[in-house]
Amino acid sequence: MDQTPVYDSATRPSPFVEEFLVLIRYRDLIFQLISRSIKTRYKRSLLGVAWTMINPLLTMGVLTLVFSSIFKYPGREYALYVLSGLLIWNFVAQSTTAAMGELIWSGGLIGRVFVPKAAFAVSAIGTGLVNLFLSLGAYMLIALILGARIHASVFFLPVPIFIASLFALGVGLALSSVVIYFADVMPMYEVLLTAWLYLTPVIYPLDLVPEGVKVFLYLNPLYYLVDAFRTPLLDGRLPDLSTIVIGFLIACLSLLLGWWIFTRKAREYAYNV
Image (cartoon, rainbow, N blue to C red; front, side, top):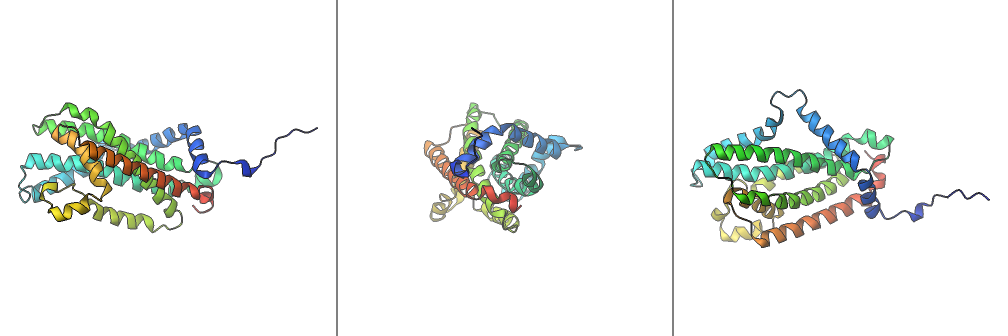
C-alpha cells in the first residue's frame, strides 16, 4: 500500500510562528544579505566606512555653530551631545527606512524562490548595527580629539543598542507590511522622521524644555532610547533603571505588534511586490 505522505496545509502552524521558525532556518541568508548590503555600500568608495560618520558630523558641525550659543552650551560639550544623539537616531531612522526598501527591491527574488519575508527587515537592522558600531569607533576618536574622556560605562552600550534594535525591527516590520500595498508610505515616513527628530531631545537639551512640554516628550518612545544610549556615552554613568525598563517594554511591544502585523499577510507578499 502506498504510504506517500500527503501535504495538508491545515497542519501548518500560524504565520506568526511559521515565519519565525523559517527565519531561524534561513539565518545564513540573513548574514549573506547583510554582507551584500555592506559590500554594495562601500564598493568603489574612496572614503569607505568614513561615510558612516560624514552625515552626522556635518549635521553636528552646523548645529553646533548655530545652537551652541543659543543653548548656552560650550561648543565641545554641545557637539558631543548632538553627535551621541544622532548616532542612535540615525540607526533607528535608517534601519526602519531600509527595512521597507529591502523588501520592495527584493521583489524579483521573492517572486521566484521561497525565502522568509522577514529576513529582509532583519538584515536591514543587522546592516544598521554594523554601521552603528563603526560610527561608535569614530565617535570615540572624535571625543578624544576634542579632549573628552571615554568612561567605562561605554561597556553598557550593548544594552540600549539591543533595545533600540528590537524597537527598530518592530517598526520596520510594520512599515514593510504596509509599503507592499501603498508605495507612498516610504516618502511619507521620511517626512514623519523629520518631525520625529525635532520631537526628540537629540539636538536640544531636555533641561531647557518647559515642564508642561516634557510630559509629551515622555510619550515619545525614542526619548528613552536616546537617553539610554547617550547617558553612558556622554555622562559616564549608567542610565536610570526606569529608562531602561520603559525602553525595553516599549521595544518588546513594538516588536510583537510589528511581527503580528507583518506575518498576518506574509504569505501574500510575493503576489503584491
